[in-house]
Image (tube, rainbow, N blue to C red; front, side, top):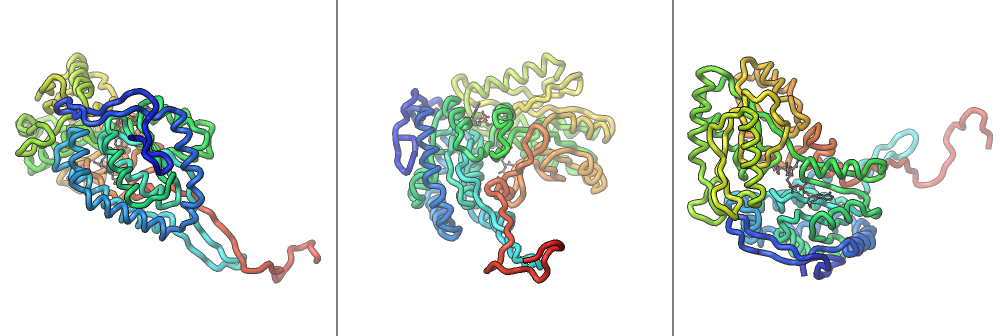
Length: 486
Ligand SMILES: NC(=O)C1=CN([C@@H]2O[C@H](COP(=O)(O)OP(=O)(O)OC[C@H]3O[C@@H](n4cnc5c(N)ncnc54)[C@H](O)[C@@H]3O)[C@@H](O)[C@H]2O)C=CC1
Ligand SMILES: O=C(O)CCC(=O)N[C@@H](CCC(=O)O)C(=O)O
């Protein structure tokens, strides 16, 4: 029983699917997908439940969301373990993901009030009241890299605002989604308020195309996000929030502490085995002796990064990638860059057949004439040597994406110059470019998003404003408009 529809666990009626631990290929979950007919039932259930959920009022909804937080706290170790098993991420990292899921509740409550609260003002024309209302029934699509935290970042604010939800997780992480729904169920959410449909493309397409959906909140690849954007063309009444990938640049300029710079580069490029949308993909290093020294130290440090299964001790820095297919994709990406004229500084290798384990790679692509503007979603950092700062910024901006960007530079002036010119939704100075705060908006420009930033601003796309002018009784104005007599 792996679909959660109308408050009941039911079996999928589609085809068989499995989820495997990518570090050893062991099957950890199997089931059948939800059919389009089951998606219809889930959407109907969400529709039936929506008005009553909204009418419960914020405080009653909050009480249930807080009960969910208690469930998350009580089951934190299990959540971290299941995420680790299913994604291959090391336990230290999945513990932080479970922690972020818990932290999301308080942040979403604060954001609800700050971004979408209500207000009243007396004006000569009457009492001006601002309120926010939920869109209605929304679909949430999640990615595999943060299978708990990122869908949670749509679901919690959506429910707080009074929407009901149909959640379609990544087909690579169904077990995490199932656990999340069990916790919502235990928290006492009324039937139909959240529904889970598991499956692949067929399930996703049926949900995204459903005419009874009022909105779709998506975190995933730019390719899928673009398909959804086209699908929603001509549907201005539906809210579409797209959080997509990036091809993120990091510039190094005039840094005294080379070791600290190397640390920030590694945390930016290789955390989560490079499977974060915010990861640095392109590193710009000044030509000359200082740049040479930095690259030498970086290459040595990259070679020493510990890679291993999620549960080995001592814990590795990098776990497995999500699948063997993803690992082979990174080997292929590296081969393409080498064919285009790249020079390997540290080779990325597939460590074990049948698994997603790869070693981190570093490649100098300075001599590649046309660097593909692709998001290689794994631990492969491309290095470009530059001669002057303007050139570095121009190259950094040579992307259709615009998610995150950073500069490591001891000069505030350099940072200000960079900040004014770089085009990205997250711009950091002397800090890694991964690990964004949920207390800030999170989203990118260009092919990285559609200007519906998530995290603290998720509240914005979960409701619409209703402006009212109100008076307690009908009354004549002091002065009638010219030409009127009553
Ligand atoms: N900007 C952001 O906040 C973040 C973006 N990402 C991006 O996500 C990607 C990795 O996640 P993936 O799971 O591979 O993304 P994906 O795009 O393959 O899948 C995301 C979701 O969309 C569904 N889906 C795929 N094709 C569909 C279609 N045609 N119609 C309807 N649903 C469809 C999938 O089943 C899954 O639930 C990377 O590109 C990464 O940069 C990941 C995390 C955060
Ligand atoms: O949504 C939030 O609370 C903040 C966004 C966030 O956690 N971002 C992470 C993960 C992004 C990704 O999936 O790649 C980050 O910035 O590293």
